[in-house]
Amino acid sequence: MSDRTPVLAFRDVNTHYGAVHILKDANIEIYAGEMVCLLGGNASGKTTTLKTILGYVPPTTGHVELDGENVNGWSTAQRVANGVTMVPENRRLFKRMTVRENLEIGAYLRHGEDLSEDYDRVFDLFPRVKERLAQKAGTLSGGEQQMVAMGRALMARPKVLLMDEPSMGLAPKLVAQNFEIIDRINKAGTTVFVVEQNANMALSIADRGYVLQTGRIVLDDTAEALMANPQMREAYLGDI
Amino acid sequence: MSTEVAPEPVRSRRFKFNWVDGFLWFLRVAALIAIVVGVVGSIQQFADGEGPSAAAWRDLIVSSISTGSMYGLIALGYSMVYGVLGFINFAHGEVFMSGTMVGLISATMLFENGFWDSNPWISILVVLVVAMITSTLVAVAIERVAYRPLRGAPRLIPLITSIGVSFFVQYSFAGLFGVAIRNYPPAPSQLSGNVDILGIPIAGTRLLVIGVAVVSMIGLWYFVTQTKTGSAMRAVAEDKEIAGLMGIDVDKTIVTTFAVGGAMAGVAGLLWALLFRGVDFLTGFLPGIKAFTAAVLGGIGNMPGAMLGGVLLGLFEGVGPQLVLAGLGIPAVSQLKDAVAFAALVLVLIFRPTGLLGERLGSEDRV
Image (cartoon, each protein chain N blue to C red):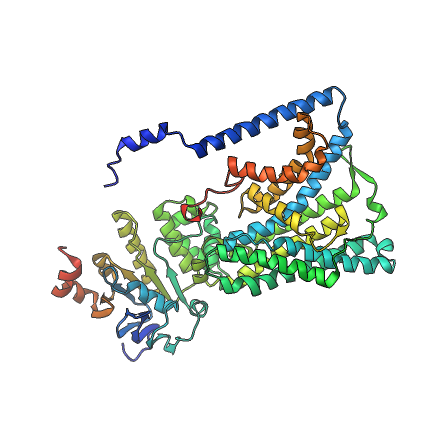
């Protein structure tokens, strides 16, 4: 694997909020087609990791790479334009706009391209979204909104899809459904990086995982190995 | 747990008399009684053959709608900026004034070389374009210089800045063009007559004003709902952070919003010229505040609301004094039109603080 260039990588990244040291020597590598998860409890640095990828938080030392290129000086917009798309926590749809408009905004940077294939892909994954196209996004149920949020992200044809806490605020049944959808998106060829507290769920579909503890990556292994790791079981999984 | 809500406080709240609420209810009831008594009185007068004739009422309504649609076009700028940035841009009246002032220069030049009389329609179009370009540039410049550095500051700060900007623009124009009131050349003779619409004679100027306002509104509606830039604007208004994550250039979209609001104010500048002719450096103040009232009336942040609010405010101040105050036996009612316009603002805030088409404010938006 190491001879390929990772789609997204952290190289010895350290970040600070003022004097507070958040990420400590973080190294992450995500390769094309993979599904990688980042696990950790509250205040472990998960959100900071995403903000660092998107350029909201600059690394104090080390750098972020997209396709092997150091992107430390890039703006958020440049990173987004180069294939980093996020499905935000709690979905954050444009509630006063229709479902169709939400999807169109997902494809905002793809000027003048034919989007019909992308719409078909979204409707294939989420037939319900097609039925709701003309409805205001704010009128949909939580599960439907999650589908639109993912559809919106897919419309950008991301190189790497970042998922911020996809299980947050959803009923257990919807969480399972959600992860099944993420799995399908990944199997269809999109690289996915899931940041999640729900370790069981995330590891059940991921190829590999990183475990963050107070800003330091303490474990880094395949999903099966992490599932079997006693340290991991103790710290995050509880009794399965 | 939150499920254990004690019934005690709820019950005691129901019976507790609150002086502020009581006073507001008194105001509501008093306003309603005054309006009902006034309207009944005016109808009585009309039935007795006193007061204005039917034709005078009709002209009053038409002129109120035309003035109101001008307010509506200015109100759009307040509402759009409030939508994306969440503060009231009090300098917007000056954006309107700058359009009508610079439009005056072009109109005077056209008048002096005779083109105004020989080609009135082209002349009006030229003045329109000049006014729109001026207002757009002024609005964009204000955003760039005064508001962008304040992005992320508490809302009160750009609000206060906007008042400062307003004075700055006013007195810059006073310095550049003098303080005297100057008049636009008289409207072309083709507009001075009446036009029959469905058998109702309407003054040509008024009809042109209403027509231009309607066309501008349709154009704006198309832009905002049917174009990519328009949906980017709505996305930025709803959630700047996520809009940015989708690749929308938020700063550019905010500039576009100011530009479009400015262009609408420029159109209103031409309409002002057609309706009132006289222009000076303070011209922006009263229409600006009234347009702000119209935006609040329609529901600030809501674009159809701004237009509706403008027309309604025009009717309130135009027809209201004659309809309500004259019926109450108050003399010289037309002098009171500005008082009525701002009484409308107070009444809206008492009866329906979110405006007619406005959405309920989230608790974080309350002061």
